[in-house]
Amino acid sequence: THLHSQLAQLSANLSDTENLVRMTSVQAESMRGLGAWHGGMFMAASKVLGEEAINRDAAAQAKGGQR
Image 1 (tube, helix red, strand yellow):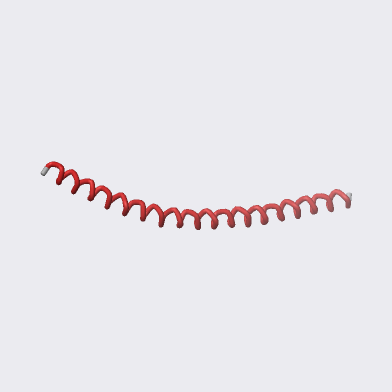
Image 2 (cartoon, rainbow, N blue to C red):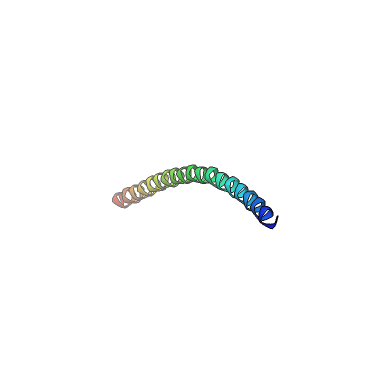
């Protein structure tokens, strides 16, 4: 009977582990999507900030050339 109770506990633990692995898989897929979204935001921010820097440098050169 002790072996039977241990086997039942093992079965319950395996069931819990299976559910946790399934949940982790779903969360990992969501994290992948979130990572792609963040990457896109970083690229967009880099493009915007890079264009602002280029425009600022061009304006500074134009002011310097007029003097």
